Amino acid sequence: MRVTELRSAFTSARRAPWVGLSALFFQVACVSGCSESGGAPGVNGGTASAIAGTPAGSGAPAGGASGAQTGGNGSSGAGAGTGPGGQSGSGGSASGGAPPLPATSGHVAHCVNGYSPHPSDDSPDMKDGPAEFFPPGKTDPSLVDTTVQPEVLKWMTENSWQGSHVEWHAIRACNLPGGGGLSKVNICRFTQLVPQDQNCVSSGDGYQFLVFHRHMIQALKQLWPKHSEQFTGFSKFPSSAEDVPAQWRSAWRDWDPDALAAGKIGDEIDKPENLARFKDEGELGFWLQCNVGQKLMGAANMPWVGLHFVLHAKWARPGNTTHGVNNTESNIDNYMFWKLHGWIDNVWEKYRLAKGLKPDDAQLKKDLVAQCQEMHTEIAIIQQDLDPDDVVDPNEPLPLESGFFHEKVRPLFESQKNLCSGCHAETGANAKLRLGGHVSSSDIVEGLVNQPSRGGGQFELVVPGDPDKSWLYLKASGKAETAGCQPSASAQCIPGVMPPSMAGPTLSADELATLHQWISDGAAGPP
Image (cartoon, rainbow, N blue to C red):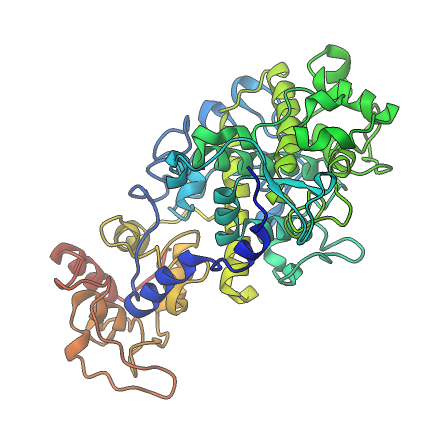
């Protein structure tokens, strides 16, 4: 399919529509919020639904998997996890040794449950194979570039995937000379998100590289299952013009011997002599990812390094087009990006199977969730122009907590019925009010007790011992409209019931009684 007007079409596309109408509705309507989750959450027990193969409601790894948590505050450790059946796990986890999924329901729904198919997947207009893009004013076939189909490009633009891919790589250079230089949002300001493992310095980074790109590949295949060919890698290292799309055959040049030999190792990674070159997945990821001349400390048998970069360079057009495979701002638009990264993913999977690791083992699933959560946070930073104070690390392990608030009150805010934590979670919380998500109960209580409201005039959110002076209770009970709210210098009065409903309070009488009791008894946090 030829697409000559992609550039103008996608530069004029609305940026982040879900932050448009949705956020507008939330700003008008939400103080207690709504939820994105597809299932009711558990408390200290994980989410009610999970990636296929993970036990529902289980916060612990399946199959006896465990991770050596070596990176505090969500930084990525280099310790190996132990997978099901005692098999060696990663050479560095995607989330500090992959602790169990956080105890509360702070996961982004698609990170745990996957995506539903995109409506365009059923469209008769959507094609397989590459779309064609010409630089403006050019029609020379030798200059044509190949992209994913327009429906995919539109989705990527609307959901800031191009930008978040840039930020994912940029934050892994924050502690290196000239760090974070490609970032468009000064990502290194978000020190709580900077991984300990930095770009091509450790095996942990090599592992994260593999997991992150698998997350993206899987997500796109979930969105377009009938057109997954676009995201399916080369079945073998492309060694001749016949192995690539027709648009690239006239530009074919034979590989240098080092690259060709490395490609053969990748294709035959499951041979014993090749498995022996890489002691774990992290070393394999370093070899597949890093540039010519980079070396991993302690790796004794690693062959020539540079495959990822020479594969990118193989499909660069002169001028590096708007959607070029080496255009660092938008290279995921390029059809060949997914062919080469899909081949890398195939090599990794062949290595895993040869090592006795399964595609659905618990360690890998937690690491995929962690990478998805990080990407989602980077998308939020881009789309909502967040400050560091507005962002928490979505992969920092939460403490085990107990007590009346944690066990009785918090579940009211996180339930599918009341839909509070959808607007009021850990990142970009409406009115800066956090009522759930990936945040500890202690921090939620601290943000409520004796804190001024943003829409309740002179009222504070929670006044210990006095529910009828607590804006949180007044809003949830529908009593805010008659509470005598007076606008202050720092807060207007928005007295509508929360969660928003034309029929009155969403919380049941018993639920309101529980909230009333907690405040009456002193609004204590976890012991």
